[in-house]
Amino acid sequence: MTTAAQAQGAPPPSDGPAKTVPSFDHGRVIERARQLAGSPFAPPRAELPKALADMSFDAFRDVRFKRDRAFFAKSPSGFSMELFHLGFLYKDPVVINLVREGVPAPIPYDAGLFDFGQTKPPGRLPIDFGFAGIRLLYPLNKPTVQDELAVFLGASYFRFLGAGQHYGISARGLAVNSGEPEPEEFPTFREFWVEEPAGDAVQIVVHALLDGPSVAGAFRMVITPGEETTVDVGSTLFPRQAIKKLGVAPLTSMFYYGENDRRSYRGFRPEVHDSDGLLIEAPDDAWTWRALRNPTQLETSRFPAPAVKGFGLLQRDRLFEHYQDLEVRYDLRPSYWVEPAGDWGPGRVELVEIPTDNETHDNIVAFWTPDAPVQPGGEPLRHSYRLSSRKLAENVTPKARALHTFVTEARASGDPQAGPDHTRRFIVDFAGGDLAYWLDDPKKVVTETSASSGKINAAFVVPNPEISGFRLFLDHEIEQPGGRAELRAVLRAGQKVLTETWVFPWERPAGPG
Image 1 (cartoon, one colour):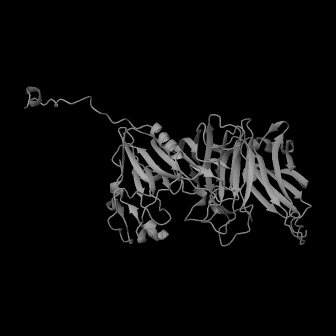
Image 2 (cartoon, rainbow, N blue to C red; image 1 turned 135 degrees about the vertical axis):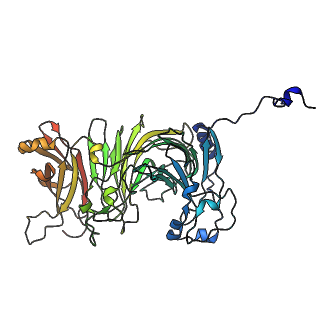
Image 3 (tube, rainbow, N blue to C red; image 1 turned 180 degrees about the vertical axis):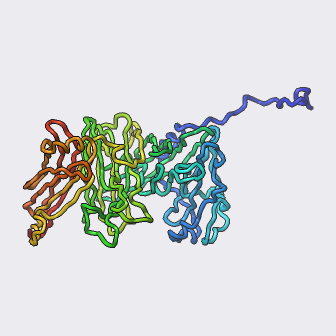
């Protein structure tokens, strides 16, 4: 029987109050991570058709998301999102959820979202087949062109760009046992929640669920595009088991060869690297610069930083003629700078350098690691920090910077006799800060140097008007074959520290000297 109220459009009576779907918030991701950590690790797996499982890199690159199917592409915010197909190295399925008006929903798999190019499309696959990752786009350089803003693809790797930058360095959610004798563990982002941006949004928010044999975690990332794009990261970690070395805010890059390391120099390109040094900022306005190398064996350098204010892998050298590569444009690779928020507790920054014989392998890792051992149980580990993609070194530090590091034999120019292999001459160019001011009275600029072992035979500074700065010459000797030393140098004028502290290691060959 229909009542008069129902005839006029009123809803029929219910048996109880209407049920509402709880609005999505980051707490739900944290709770998922907590539950995962309480269970044995079970990696997500997908049964990939042979064509996808055996896919080559070129075939994978040929599979493209259809631009006209991009999510929220018509939003006036300018943001849009595309997905990556499973295949090649990316065989673990990732669930992608779209959050609209506070309600999350997984994106079902649909082969029609992709243009497979020369690759034969796979047959019918289930709607929960999953994806490999996500690509976020935004008009970074021109208002009419959608540029890549950020990519989340593979393990917990992600990359992001500012205006005019080219991909090079990568960030990661977490590093586990990087540089240790045991195999490194690579936890993965197994699920994402991407909040659809409002029409007037200037940021886009991505939530990620991380999982690995030793740890589960929840990440919230707020990406703000611009001249120097920033990513504000908040992480909550639940260890499953004891972790020997936990790497927080890890950065991964490539250094093949450069001005301080010419062993692999071939062809026409003077330098090949995505980053050329590690910079660390301490709370007392002390800055440390360590130029990168391609070592002959894996090496780990440790920098105590109980209250680090910032650290990052930088590409300082921005001169095209130093690279001469029109295709990959190493001169346009971004620097990534990490600024911790809050107190992370006692810890240190570590730099891992891995030998490589080509430029395709990322062989440089930098991260912060706590001094206290990481154990399961107890309170979760929480870290917040800002990542930024920087262009120019002067946008990071106000101090004068070590622009170039050269390593040569400690002998006079033109001397036909080769110098002994137990001595080295290090030449460092400093520029920026207040150095140009002191060029009118260069005798007041002196160097303060030290070495962890061996003997400093000479150290002096001369003006370098070509860079409006100064050049340091440092001769060092190691008597013991196979001996190793870490050199340090800083420029001063009286009590005033003019530059960051330059740090560089070298090792005497183990053979006879």
